Amino acid sequence: MNDVVRLTDVRRSFTQGDVTIDVLQGVNLNVAEGEIVALLGPSGSGKSTLLQAVGLLEGGFSGSIRIDGVEASELNSDDRTTLRREKIGFVYQFHHLLPDFDARENVVLPQLIAGATKPEAIARSERLLSTLGLANRLDHRPSKLSGGEQQRVAVARGLANRPKLILADEPTGNLDEKTADVVLAEFLSLVREEGSAALVATHNERLAQKMDRLVRLHEGRIA
Ligand SMILES: Nc1ncnc2c1ncn2[C@@H]1O[C@H](COP(=O)(O)OP(=O)(O)OP(=O)(O)O)[C@@H](O)[C@H]1O
Ligand SMILES: [Mg+2]
Image (tube, rainbow, N blue to C red; front, side, top):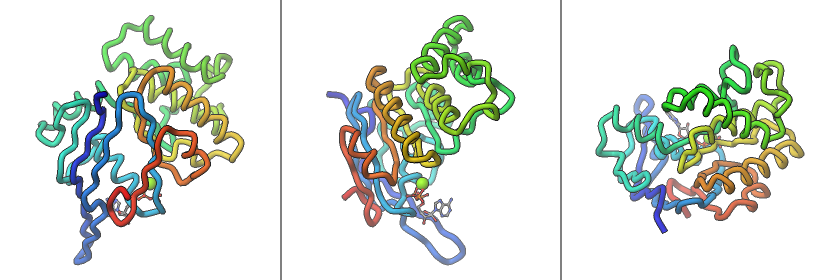
């Protein structure tokens, strides 16, 4: 089976004044095609930092970061952006939805940017949102949606371009327990249906148990 993510000896340090913290101290981690991996670890252990490395959002990392067979650390910034757009979808805790666009448009726009036609993008947006129970919320702007509903729109948007890899940082972190369970179950079933792989940072052991595999960050490494 092919690995969508292959991290070898990934390191990241942050320096503030004369204090340096070594957050990632040689992370090795593979995620197979279609595999859903929970990333656990206490606050400050480096989960978000690791997702930033895999998401090719920032520099400053050393080691090898292979995304779907491509060595990202050797790419220039334009090629890294292209790789990220083509392969990776993001779902954040604070969903970063566009406030002036309705639910449907929030899921349509990334598809148009990626080159889909408008009818295709609208059809996919409506299908994803309907699967997530939002068929009668398509015209609602984020401010007219509940937190759980906004999170579902963020899930649909993350999956819009059929990414091989979904990166999710505390995707249900700001929802009450019951809503978090429902949204996570929907998220997992949709990711499985789409055949994407996912790396999901979470504090919630119980929700993590529902994923295919758990890994833990401890002292800068995957334990
Ligand atoms: N840009 C930055 N500059 C300096 N230090 C940083 C920066 N980003 C993160 N850190 C530090 O790196 C460590 C890991 O942060 P990170 O956000 O990755 O943790 P986390 O595991 O996601 O925590 P949480 O569960 O609270 O979200 C923290 O100690 C943090 O203070
Ligand atoms: Mg974090």
